[in-house]
Length: 277
Image (cartoon, rainbow, N blue to C red; front, side, top):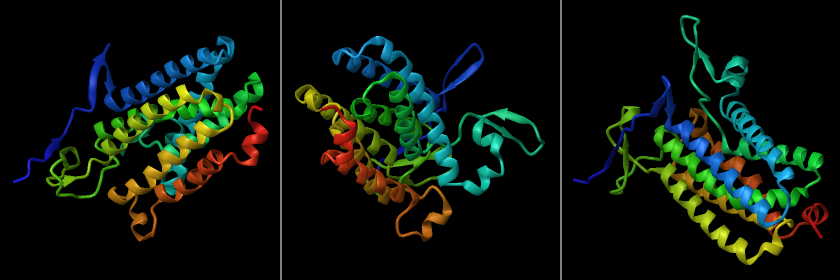
């Protein structure tokens, strides 16, 4: 008999002053904290100035959160969320009795987060006069580690699960009421993104001169969303309607981001025009 891993962690990491801190929220906090620290180091390394760094975090935080939330609501369940605009915007939910409860954001889409981040960086670059391709390249350096933390949060929530499997490292997601093993697709992604981050840091140290030309941004998009495209073949569809599609929503949304990534990697004309000379 195969020794599958029975996965049923307590969603609450710890309690603080009577408030439950959940693993999912903690992983998102670690994603932003690690991104903040790495971006701070990059700004110092590139001598960009602390006065230009301080506002960047708030732009990216809001851009990623708003984009990821709206992306999930509009890409995956538009009918449900558009009929509940308050729940779409605020982390609350109304029960059958009409009472409101704080539940956190139940659903954040990485594709929407990327689009929100790009919009936030465009606004930041215009206001603070920092080259947009330099900021995007710096995001390309740190983003894989942040993505790894987010996928660990999905694992702790037993969500975005893989297909049923017989591999010995399969996870039984007991929280979902299952007694069979699935691919721990969230863990596959987290490990890949963490490895990508380490490789990217090594490349950065050898190719600092390429920052500001779109190379690191392109590398990040290409690697993350190409992996995302193929890992979807091992994952359960998030919505029932995806079962009738040749490619699911995650794969369809990955294709344009892969195309943008390859374009930047190849030094497209727009990158040259927007980038540093």
